[in-house]
Image (cartoon, rainbow, N blue to C red; front, side):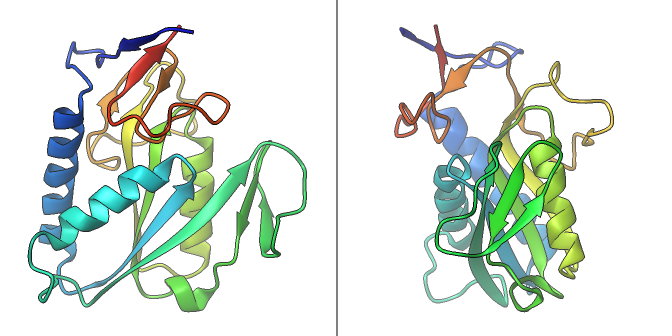
Length: 196
């Protein structure tokens, strides 16, 4: 398979520079709205990992001593579309045709602002299920954050307003890189590519 540099549906090159600028813009938005709050970055593994790390760094910026938040913690969930017991224990929450593996409790989430982070919103089912999970554990509020989204694939009953996903970049086609993979390959790339 050949990799080609991907563009948004608006023609923007999905380069490392665009990704980092997008992250800084979204981090500034979250800092402005939720400063002085307890913040939980809830990443959907494995694709959301790269975005979570860079987003967390951007929230803190260069000032290691002074955070705009009361606290920042990072938690994770793993979603799978097959029926299997989670490795290492933890609870499984049945989704539609997938499961959410997690070890979260109300102690991790209750009363905190939760940002659910994933690489891409495709149909919206995974993001919606994780948002519901965080809400059920008593989150003060839950905000989805995804670098990319596919407007044509989103199911009508899983819609997100543009500001709810903090203006993710619209894309079509099969994309890889920056957390997105194809059978475990290409996640480590620092930009987005079309595969094919």
